Image (cartoon, rainbow, N blue to C red; front, top):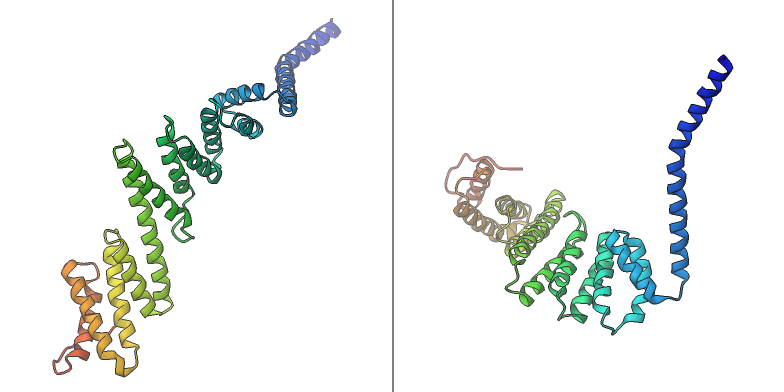
Amino acid sequence: MIAVSKKMSNFAQHFNFMKIRLPILLLSAIMLSSCGEYERLLKSSDHQLKKERAIEYFEEGRYTRTVELLAQVLPRFRGSDQAEELNWINARAHYELRDYIMAGSLFKRFSEEFSWSRHAEEAFFLAAYCNYLLSPRPELDQYFTVEAIDGFNQFKRRYPFSDRIEEVDSLIAEMNEKLVEKSYLSARLYYDMRQYRAAAIALASALNDFPETRFREEMMFLQLESQYLFARNSVPERQLERFQTAYDEYLTFIEEFPETEYTRDVERIYNSLMRFLRPEENDDGEDID
């Protein structure tokens, strides 16, 4: 009796194991069959079937298979009625795969070759947007940032009444802010290396290019301080001229920011400038390092 009970228990365990294992085996078989079918499809010369399956794969979200098949069949459908939709799907599939360099190139080409398409406006936007997505943090090279700004500005010129204009303006402002932050970091590096003349020039250039930056107050202060330190470290025969330039920067700064978080430092710079420019006046102002 005990032996029978043990056999029944072993059978139940085996049955439960098979209940779990069977779906896995079936799924594996389906996947292997699917892979085998796809491999045969890649080697097939039936371009019509490849085109149809590429579209199906795209709709299923299987983008790698989509682009692999379209790479084989797109040349066959060049100039046909189906070329527009296939090229659009190809660009979209690369975009979904986050291959933004290729996707951006394909969207740009699509907007040029199919300018009459219902997808043309979106393709033009996405070509620029791919560069936006490739734009790195401010410390790095900003090639893609500049490309994104240029692409968005071209979009505005081509589609001035687009519903995307507000979004495009926001993206351009964001990219411009990244460029000015890059300029700020470069200027700050000059400042930290005590290359004050280079820092003052870089800051002035950045402020001229991006007058509305959120860094404006800090950058204007650093420009004033850099100009002052450049003058103070100059040879004696050039100091008067350069201190006067620093004083002009001081006047510009306090006119725009009469109440500033840099008040104490600005006052120190002013007092030091006055001791040089107006030595006849007594001033107990403290020099800055």
